Figure: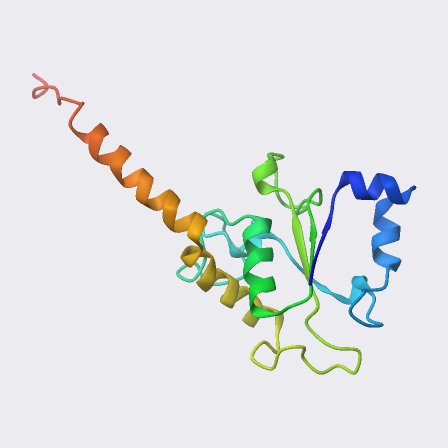
Length: 165
């Protein structure tokens, strides 16, 4: 099940959304939403250093993942997912919409057992998401279009001659 939290829904609920979301109980059971794990796009971004927030090896990381892509991947595998669009990673200095968002995932049930046995830890979820995001249709279509642009741009420039001494 997927739940989106944005300014519209937060304002309809009245009051401060942060305390409301943290105290809310998930519709999937008695597990409070604050017990869900948080995954920020910076955790999976290969453009970030470890100091900037990357949490997986750079060779397994993805180029500029979005919170919506992480949500899609995790919801497809069967996790209970909550997307918080207006949350930001504290170490992220860029305030663009592209870098906003946080995904909350129910990793464990009320009794402490994993919801999905193949994902016992948060790191296993992050590695799976990083492995699956490049295979999304939105990613493969973008890559196909950019190859044509690169080929057209290569023939346009002419190099200058050698520099004389």
